[in-house]
Length: 68
Image 1 (spheres, rainbow, N blue to C red):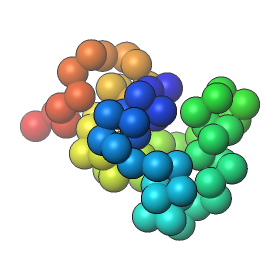
Image 2 (spheres, helix red, strand yellow):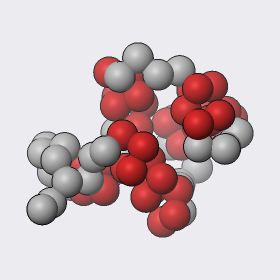
Image 3 (cartoon, rainbow, N blue to C red):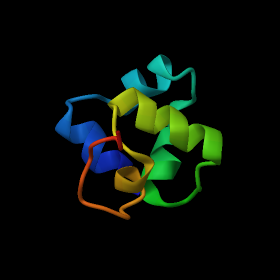
């Protein structure tokens, strides 16, 4: 998952992301390190927050744009 790469490229800290999504910072860290897998609803939250496609978040494509 590209979460860490996307978050850092946007200049957003783990803490800010966690606060904005009403999550725990430790969860964000675990998702980024691969220690924990995000469920479907959490993946959608990340994609919506960054305005990217789920496929881009999950490294299934290199195109970050949402399908039209």
